[in-house]
Length: 467
Image (cartoon, rainbow, N blue to C red; front, side, top):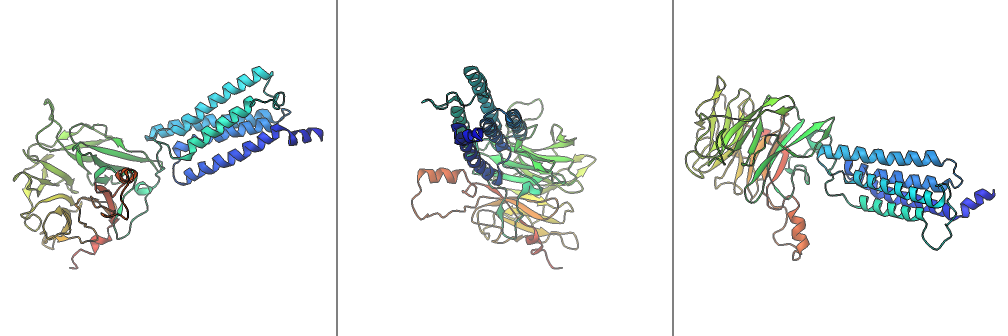
């Protein structure tokens, strides 16, 4: 009874309850971040909870019993969490900050335990200097671990990634009103352009552009139901790769670029089309599609039909005069492109055509003055004779005062993706913006730069002619 009383009343037991309270505090912050989706970066930080547990087990067993298994089990968990976190998060493109913190603090604990053992003749001696005026070694180490643990968990760390699991990056499907796709992940404060999923839904591609016009294509891949972070394509160049699309069969990746032809130096004066063939789980080096489809002017937004023909937009009739063309593939080569008729092309700019695999529906952007903004999405269907009917505006539910472009239907036909530069805020806010307000808006989507939106494809069926 006296031993129990000494433990209950002594400073070791008080420190034990202090540890339990700290575990509760750090754990609450940690699991809040886990609930918010910041998983892999903070799973390493769970190792800090293991360290706290090891200290608690050590202090509670003042006489040494139960100490070894309690300490080493918790301590081992901290190392495992840390190593797994660093490996997984770096593998997915994040920073692994939580794991690094966990491992670093584990090393600190080893040093403190070694110093304490040397100074006090063993780690089981807990009471020798507890009553002194200076903070005991183990108490100092405990406070250090708690401070670092709270710092590691309090806010999502730079480089952490959000767990994305399931179809469409785990995003909640939209209704008949367009919504920003994957805000803060794909659609950010940057200028994001066109996007496309692979036919099996396990790969996602999109473009990012900066104010100087530099642009890159990024890829996200789903493995075991979990999505990776955005990564450059393996054959990325510095010459403005843009307008990515995937063939309906998933065996070819198309894009537009000013990259030089083999043997040439420096960027081309105009954008041409390139094709990368599927090579296992990745893509082979892209090849230039030749002079049949390409021109000496800018050629943009190639989209392939189920039979291999490519629809695209081109300025071959003059700078700034975009029209939509079609090129047939014969014996593996693309023939001279043919301009689509006046049901699609007008005296105004038409560009960014999405063609359905069956080649019976066309969605594109037109800058006709009758629209709702600086460029609206239009849609056309083929009639019974195979001719394109006059394109109609997709309406103010899709179009905004800003430009809408880069349409792309999901492989399952359920959702329409497109790019928009619509602005979500009020031009005249309730109060003058502070500098921090501008910085916050700059880092968020719907700030006037381009974002990727998606909407239920039922809106297409509502526009399909009844006959």
